[in-house]
Length: 379
Image 1 (cartoon, one colour):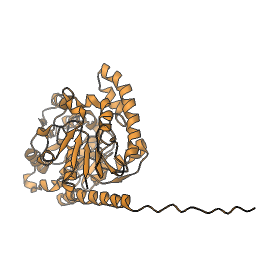
Image 2 (cartoon, rainbow, N blue to C red):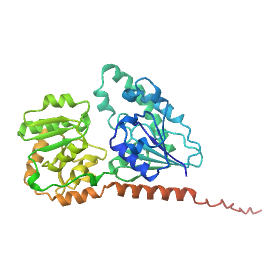
Image 3 (tube, rainbow, N blue to C red):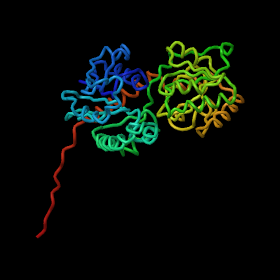
Image 4 (cartoon, rainbow, N blue to C red):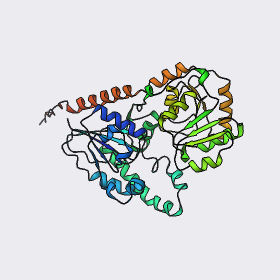
């Protein structure tokens, strides 16, 4: 069986690329197609595969400005020649599912989210853009949005990474989706004795507007409690300027340091609304609870009152109130770890492989022949 995996772009190792790695382990014979490929930013698992770029990858400064080429990506996907492949797996968060599948091929889309910048977060992205970009976004997003909805009909089956994303697929594409949470490398994290634990809270992840890192900094400035911030992104310098004397902004850190900080924090602070959110699962894998905004993917991984606490308004005051409740609540590290185990990579691979094989059997089943109906005509 020839397998093709289509991933939106390969310029860094984040949650979507971890899913891609898992798909590569399930289907080691698969070829990978993408818009832009930076081998130096990829894991050995991905680099060892046959990776082909669309024409987007040959455009000027594509590795840095790839998102600016979004209006060209529908055309680029439709030019990919996938004849001869039996199974096509598209990994969708940017344009990936819009390939033209050859006759007889099964196309399954693992959807991290319908493209945020043209659907549920369009107005947020547009509000944060400059004057010229705001003006260009209106016609470009209208065109890509229409193409995106039409291209969803080229998918035989959708898989969503969370119930939250499955709801978006139903709203924007009018399609059902199986929910299979993404893989988390639970075994890479450790639980340490309480005596080794620090007095700080941790916020980790990309520092971008929709994740609302500013709210956490504002709350911990006001409380005078220690907060350690890990991650890069467009808001890094702003967060450094906002940080008071009890907030330490480390910027991007190697995995070994992040692992150390997870295991020794009081709790993870998670103020944004995510599609799924791997960071809370990594914190729970380290035996640490999560203080999270009670919407989106966090509500599907964190158990309120057992492995963390939710606050229900995105404000510094709500985070302060949740932190006060947190200090009055006891959490069991073993229970946090057990909850994280539900999202282990091995479980993802088993569930995804079983889903694909069931759909392949269904597609290959012989079709029942049409039986003509005899109509009697009297007189």
